[in-house]
Image: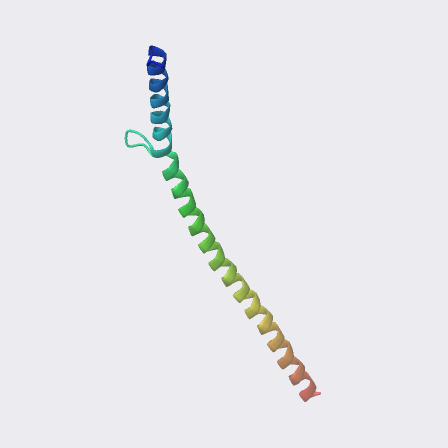
Length: 85
């Protein structure tokens, strides 16, 4: 089997395709590639999850405080109502 012009053409096409894929994935000419964009998106998602978890925690603390205050207030009011009556 000898090396023909068709082989040379196929090698060049493959080389060009690999370069195109590399440019898309890693970026070209200082541009941001797909890999970097996905990495940045993951970092933003992690930060968003952290903020959500903090907000969720604060919400339940507030609900617990309000519920606890209501129970204590109602209990004290009931005790004072019975003591005065």
